[in-house]
Each structure stands twice: as structure tokens, then as C-alpha cells.
Length: 463
Image (cartoon, rainbow, N blue to C red; front, side, top):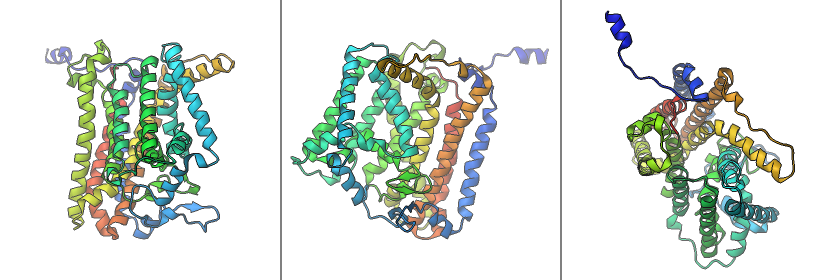
């Protein structure tokens, strides 16, 4: 009777449709434990790694440059090195200027299609361009292959309009305007009622274009690296690519090639991680339960506008606080007294975590939305019919492959973040022992964040 009563006692059951149901059948607990162990072992190996090897693992190679690139030595202070800023400011003077103008014409046509074309987001070119072409695929290409956004639609016009800038950019603002623009984009992505609605999205794209062009008229081409939030994010992720600015090295060597960011630049890096984390959390059963929404009777985004706005703000505020606490404790363990400098120096180390989770979170969307994008492109250019299929999401074996690829992206991002953090700490402290001591709290933070990221992947979702 006791056993029968225990069997009939109500308990919690997790369920999810499509590929989420297969994920719940996978041994995700074992995979999560394995991923966390991998990151922990990386931490231990770094502590035993000889200082000479640790200093040289991000040394890049340039063809015809004796095998060494500028990133191998300590850069001067400033978020961008002087050569980077000069390259960005040239804008329309380089051979790629006409490509920038051509891309602008294409973007203008997409905006027109957003207003006049079909209002179904999976059939409208503007919705597919922004949320699939740029936010999913272009971000991924930036971190894997380099910086395609250097030929952005705004670079050529800003260089032309800003040749006689009205004002000198106040350096005390740092990357603050770009941070504001990126957070506004995140609010559209996670809080707006209908971010994929083509007509609505057209107005948002025009508003962002006006922001970038107006800043270019006022401050000149430097605005591209200070106020164009999306372009700045892509530029940061491009530094994670093994191939960057003509050099080749361990992924992430471009991060070490930039100087110590200012406060706004450091917060920009952490905001990228905070936005990505909440992008995954806000869809889970756990989050919907916290805010009092039944995930099985989800009534639409209008019901979660307020909670999502608060959640996004909390993520972007709490993450720097936790990160700062880890930095402060590590600074004290190392016997240093410059936690502010340590915070700014080590903040870019979180970029691989943010990028890895972006790849993982949007992997399934890329497989599905990419087909819709190919379908629209094929129709535009008179190509063959593209049939959109999701059959691969209905079998356990294919879902397992997708989930393991997602988990590998999360764990790989954390491992690379640990390597970057250690290299940056060596540069900051100049001593291997002090660098190791300073990394202990931050390493714990990254191990726990690995477990959090893998939990997000495995959690059932309600929207």
C-alpha cells in the first residue's frame, strides 16, 4: 500500500514538443557533468601550464612578417589600437567602398519590401535579412571567419558624410553610445511585442540607420567604432576568429591584440553575455513559472513585455556585479590593488562564452530559418523550388547530434574564455603565480556559467 501510494503521489513532469521532447530523453545530466568537468580540468591544466607556454599560446603568425604579429606584444591602452581605428576611419576611401554602397541599396530594397511585401515574417525579405541573415548567420560568420561587417551598408555613407565632421568626438564617452544602441537592439529582440513583423521592423531599421548616419555627420567615421552597436558587436566577435586582419593564430588572438577597454567597452562585452543568457532564459519553463505564466497556455509576447524588460535589465546589471565581485576577490588574492583595471582588462575574456552560446542557442533556428531564407532567395532569382522541412527534428539520433554540437559550442566557448582570461591576467600581473591566484574566483565563475549554459540548452521551453 505504501508503494502504491508513493506511485500515485503527484509529481512534476516535464514535456515539450518536437525536438525539445527528444532532448528531454537524452542523458543531458551526464553531458552537463562532462562539460563542466572539461572546463574544470582546463582550469587545473592552466594552473600547471609553464608561464612561457601560457604567454606564447596566443602568439599569431603573419605571412611575410617573420611569423609574429603585433598582437604578440602588449598593445597600447585604448579600446582599439591606433591602426584599427585608422582602418575603420578610412571607410569609403578603400577599394570596398562601392560594396558598402551596394549593400546599402540592398538594405533599402529590403526595407521597402518590409512595408510593401508579404507580412508573413518567413516570407518577407526584411525579416529574414535582419533576424536570420544578420543576427544568426552574420554573427556566426564574424566569429568564425572574420569581420564581414567592415563592408556594412553604413561605412561608405558615414565616411562620405563625415569628411567634415561638425564636432570632435568626446573620448570620455568611449563606447557608451554603441552600448546604448546595442541594448536598444536587445530590447527589440527580447521585449518588443512583434520584432519580426515586417512593417514594424522596417521602422526600426530606419531608426537605427538614422542613428548611425546622424552620428557620422556629427562626429565623422569614428562613430562607426563608437556608436554603431551591431557593427561593434560583430567587430568584437570577429576578434575571436583564428584569421583576423591578415594574421593566423589560436582563436581569440585578436582579443589580445586590442588594448585595455574603457569602462563602457568592458560593459559592452559583459552586455553581450548578459543579453545572450537572457535570450535563452526567457523562453524556459522555469522563467515562465517565475513570472506566473503557464508555459502550456502561452498567450503571446504581449503578456511578458514587462517581466522580460525587467529580466533583461537585471541580467545586464547583475552579471557585471557578479563578474566584478570575482575580479575583486581575485585581485586581493594576487596582492594587487587595482580591481578597476583588472575588471576592464579581463572583461573581453567573456566574449567566447557569449559567442559560443549564440551559436548553440540559434543552431536549430539556423537550420529552419535558413531554409526559409533560401526559399525566398530562390523565388527572387527564379531558382528551383526550395521545400522547407523539419523532419530531422523528429528523430532522436539527429536531435542528439544537434544537441551535442550545441553543447560543444558552449563548452568550447568557456574553454577558450579560460585561456584568454589566463593570458590577459599574465599581461596584467606580469607574474605567473599572481596571475593564477587572481584567476581562482573567475575560474569558479566560468565553471558555474558552463553548467548554467548547458542547463539552458536542456531546459524545456514554452515560447
